[in-house]
Length: 194
Image 1 (cartoon, rainbow, N blue to C red):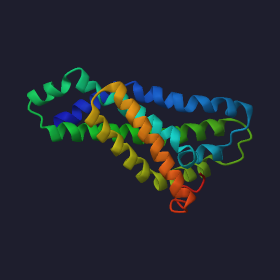
Image 2: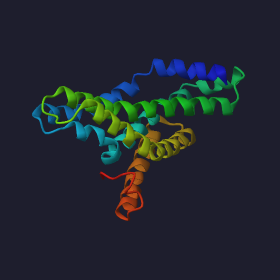
Image 3: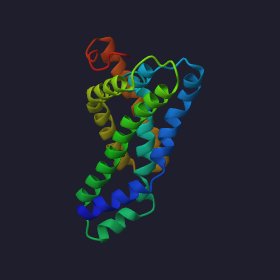
Image 4: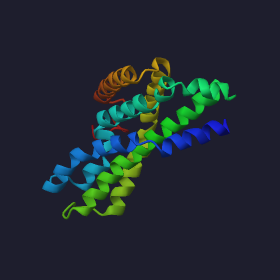
């Protein structure tokens, strides 16, 4: 198990997909930031308002990174090296969950920091960071449940393009279910800004 965790840590350090997905998430916010229509409060509530973007980003990240080892035959190499299937799956799950958690933290953090750099954002940076952390704590169980579902689907499908397609469809369905729950006032306390 420890050897597989080292392998996944190496994969995570050399993986460029997370940073590209993060850049794609932040890039559309640059125009509102520069035009002055985006405030620091918008950056703090992004986890509860823009759940579609974060779920699709997590689905794409998992769909691109997880099937890599299946397509190039590394899973057979890991098994031949003496690693159990459960150790491989656990290490891959921890790698994926860590990457998605970084997405969940860095996406609103970058938006808050960018909004704080623009004059006239109207709020103090420590207060915005505290609000962002509060929103993260309230919403991360929902996101982790969705990401666990995407991981299971990626392990089941094991093909890159098909995995991205299926997990993106499931992310859209997750948003529809979440919006239905919010409209019925079941999730309104955790997702108060939707």
